[in-house]
Length: 119
Figure (cartoon, rainbow, N blue to C red):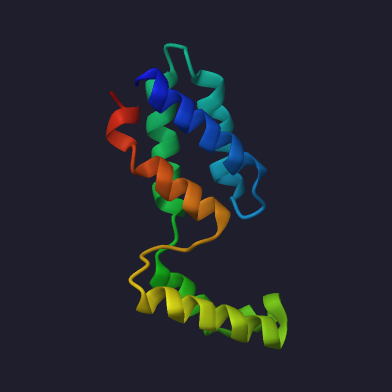
């Protein structure tokens, strides 16, 4: 990968590690990737990291299903769940494909650079 791509991915990965919305698996894959940057294992760890991000990137329909569920109200409270559902409905109406939590936004940005990362 080019130095520019590496800088971007490392920077975004460090942001991902700071988000509360990233799952433990994504954070572990991110740490392994960062540890491998500049080593012979970089491409292998990048491949694993990208796969983890792909699996964790939440499609908007899944977010909408959660927003409509009783679990959303348990998590956000009644008013919070209503606002969340309105937000997710607006996203879907505007053609958004994935969740807009910080972790998913970072994952989506990194995944857009997949080909450049695996060069």
